Image (cartoon, rainbow, N blue to C red; front, side):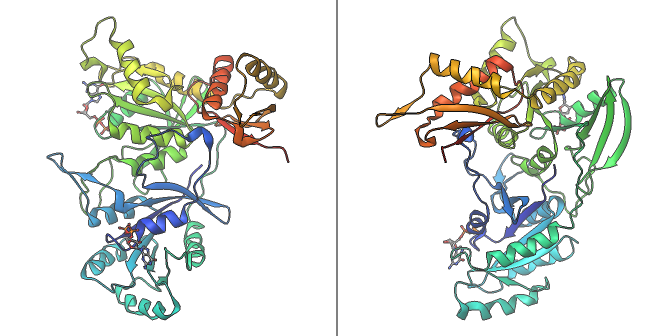
Amino acid sequence: MYKPLVAIVGRPNVGKSTLFNAIVKKRISIVEDIPGVTRDRIYYDAEWLNQEFTMIDTGGIEFVDSENHIFTSMRYQAELAIREADVILYVVDGKAGVQPQDEDIARILRSSGKPVILVVNKIDSVELSMNIYEFYSLGLGDPIGISAVNLMNLGDLLDEVLKHIKNVPYEEDDEETIHIALVGRPNVGKSSMTNALLGQNRVIVSNMPGTTRDSIDTHWEYEGSKFVLIDTAGMRRKGKIDIPVERYSVVRALRAVDRCDVAVLVLDGVEGVTEQDKKIAGYVHEAGKGCVIVVNKWDLVTKDSKTSQKYEEDIRRELAFLQYAPILFASALTKQRINRLADMVKFVSEQQHMRVSTSVLNELIEDAQLTNPPPAKGGKLLKIYYMTQASVQPPTFILFVNEPQLMHFSYLRFLENRLRETFGFEGTPIRLILRGKK
Ligand code: GDP
Ligand code: GDP
């Protein structure tokens, strides 16, 4: 599944994050309520008229220079949006009028060839609607006046977005082929691992252009299974200007994650789990994708009999929401254990597709309620009538209960653990959805 990417670009204070928040509809999902994952996020899945897309507020993208200083740059943000996004919303301030910097960015966007929608924000009333005309001078076509604060004209804006998204090449879901994305921050060894993985006596079937203009997906077969390795390294790119390393490298990672079945989260064995790793891992989890964690550069780690166990504990603590993901200690350089990666990915893919019958689930639910009674609130006890599996990839279960508000997070966690102890579901998130009595 490929979701089109819509990027918001503009000067500080024009109202980008206000618009972003107005557009995205927060997905309510109790099992995703994990502290630390969703903080200061700059991307979100949104929906308009049944069309799904991912939104990213480039104002929140930070870069790192050669001395490891973190900075933001509108110009780099715009370049990144041009490289990665399918549609760009260029937001300007209708109260402030055209600013010199607006013209600089407009020039970059104009020559990009990407669809750009010029959004004049802060048009809070009809009287202010005349303010949009001066923005014709930016040469980006008809401006759309909106008020992000008053939610005015957002429908028209989203209709316009949809017109452009409709032209984004649609990627057909190929049920049989397992799509893999190697994700991780810069320098953990993604490209080296790609080469190691593909170099291991596998037949490369073909190289097809990826969805991003300059990326190449590799199709290969291994022991009767078909795989596609989504190009995340983006080594081949040649931008107009050289963009420094993005602090979290989320933009390319999230695109690849959206398209994959199983994400291979590559960590640096020497550096351990960092904040950047957590961001990318959080996205993999929230997207409902399968996950295998690879601790790379294992050749550089001084080991004794306890080292891998201690490493595993660290990872389980730092990436607590990914308890279910198997861990592989490997080296792209020496090829140690790289031969096991494809098998692990295949295994996780099978786990994602596992179906459990309603009768077996109900036995589990009955048993679970006996050993650990459901929570109560104000003298009222939660009753779980029955449970059924609604879908796979990720396995999603619907619990029919008397009153959903009686459910407690810890009880959901308990049920999830029960499901995992009984059936495995290794490497895949599980979703539990509550339904009350009609
Ligand atoms: P960003 O830096 O581009 O993300 O801008 P913000 O979304 O943080 O908004 C900057 C300021 O502009 C805040 O004080 C917002 O309340 C205000 N603002 C945002 N949208 C509108 C709008 O439609 N009308 C008015 N009057 N103010 C707005
Ligand atoms: P990417 O940015 O994630 O694609 O990382 P690269 O594949 O470009 O690797 C970054 C650096 O780490 C390069 O100098 C690699 O040679 C080195 N590297 C990658 N994997 C390993 C490994 O398993 N062991 C060691 N010692 N070095 C590695």
